Length: 120
Image (tube, rainbow, N blue to C red):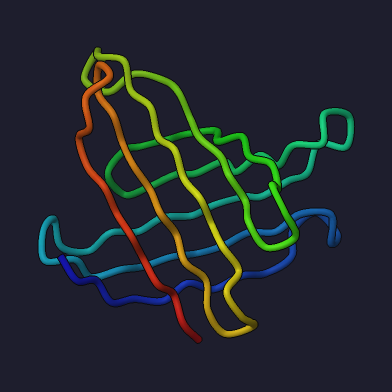
């Protein structure tokens, strides 16, 4: 599926965090809205990404940098009462491009895969 949309970022908590607003048009299910709040936990060295969507999804992802341009993270919870896991890799390709590789599993089986290229 192709998607088109906007992803905007602003600072949060006096510059100690980041918030994003995302709105995408997708073939199916249509308009997809996602808001994220990013915060760094200096005690554990991890990044938390709290996400809320217009599809009634709420996740607290945990992530860490594997190098200066690559962020790896995930979330574990339930989806329709079944074990659910998201894994993602966000790569800063250039100042104008980010790639996101994303996989969802339900009860250990692949449910969906997304590979996105976001450009300014």
